[in-house]
Amino acid sequence: MNTRLLMTLHVKVGTLLNIGPVPHGIRRTAPLAGGTFEGPRLRGTIVPDSSADWQLLRSDGVLEMDLRFTLRTDDGALISMSAFGLRHGPPEVIAAIGRGETVDPASYYFRTMPRFETAHPAYSFLNRLIAVASGDRRPEGPIYTIHEVL
Amino acid sequence: MSDGIESRPLMVLRLATAATQEIGPTSQGTLMIFPVIGGSFDGERLRGTVLSGGGDWVTAHGNGSFTLDLRVTLETDDGALIHMTFTGVRDDANHYFRTVPRFETAAPKYAFLNRLLAVGIGEIRPEGPVHVIEEIL
Image 1: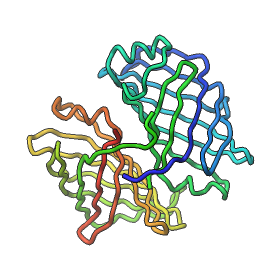
Image 2 (image 1 turned 180 degrees about the vertical axis):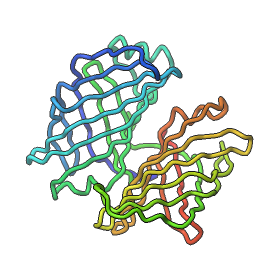
Image 3 (image 1 turned 90 degrees about the vertical axis):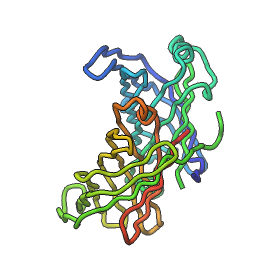
């Protein structure tokens, strides 16, 4: 599969909201306190008030992520980004992430599939592409390396 | 973190479709439904047939681009049922046809499908749509 770098997204997570056990698993929401993104064709910041990660820890131990971010480019365009993701790995690695430790991102599976929507002509190419992100959960928040699928 | 995204083949999915149902202009675009009446899938780890009763809900956006929303049921050659969905983008102007499949199954042998993300490369052939699906590693 051919891909090329779209952007690296540094996310700063705010205070987690633990919803708790729900019919399909354990639900938690992670509002974002902010962040930045940078790539060859676009760069800017994450708009904090409309960005969060809705998480569901499934009974099979897989964490499902439903991310909705609003990005603001350095030239003022607003981009709506949504992504479905999965995170899972050996219990000791997942436990270390839970304790706020930095672990090798190659030791667990953390991938998302971002989609973008924008009305800004300079970024309309984003409306027509599929992307894959590789995640790296750091104590302050995840880093997503997002590649466009060519 | 590795810089690129690595993948490996999961399956080639061939869909047989019935006559298109033209719903027409909706709030999202022009909606067409491609009923899926059969097909096959084949990969190193799984193979079988596509059951009748699925479909691909395709919305045309008027600029040569389409969004896809498919759901089908796969039956493996050893009798497991797999619920498969994908959303995707088709942009004829750029010869771009990519999908993001997801799988759900209760069969322990195929539980790996519940834990993976995948990307499909689509192509319209005379005999029907063909999707080459790769697992994202």
